[in-house]
Image (cartoon, rainbow, N blue to C red):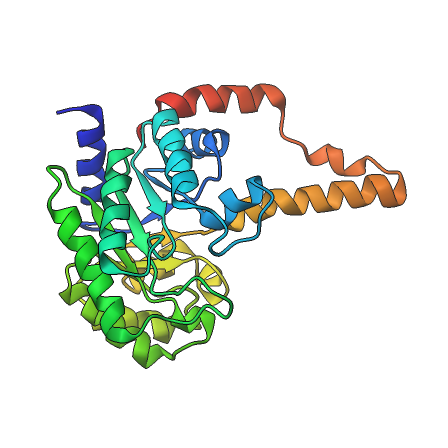
Length: 279
């Protein structure tokens, strides 16, 4: 079995039982540090990557750019990697299927596909088209020799375009279309998470944001979450450090914020270890 094949199998197995946290790096350095510090798998973040290019989130990164970014993280680490591929960089099912094919070509062990149209206001695709898109993506992923975890996202609750009942209807249909994992970002409370878990027999991904972050890993796992992602939160923490230190320097003439900086030697060691860590 090749190293990539072993990664793909390991990623599938992580979703079979228990609960794990999948952090979201935005470049090879952050990916290696996360791997060195115990991440069993990684997932790219569209927002975090867009920030590195000086762009805002949501549809501002091309498919080719995202594929190149994902390929670099796969090559720079030895843990399984999943891709945050927004709406699959296409509206039509065939285009989404092609994105999934390309995701496997660059070595990804899975990817997520949203039901969001990448235009102003972030509307949701009509129900039938949303399901057709996931069905086409899953048909492509099933054609691969090695496992590929296809995560189907119902983003309308987060975007304010539909309610929880519609999100549940969609994840049921996505599961029926073959999705390996379902995901409703930004759940408002524990009861909503429990409703998502009860609505499907597929593993459920939870975003550690808002009330879900307050619950912590143990309670999310007890409620039935199989995988916990953090989105762009860690990337945004680094940007908070930039904000705070620059405001202190330019506004107050102070370098006090530097006292919390990580040691360069420690970072170097983690980068080296992360290149070899297998999770």
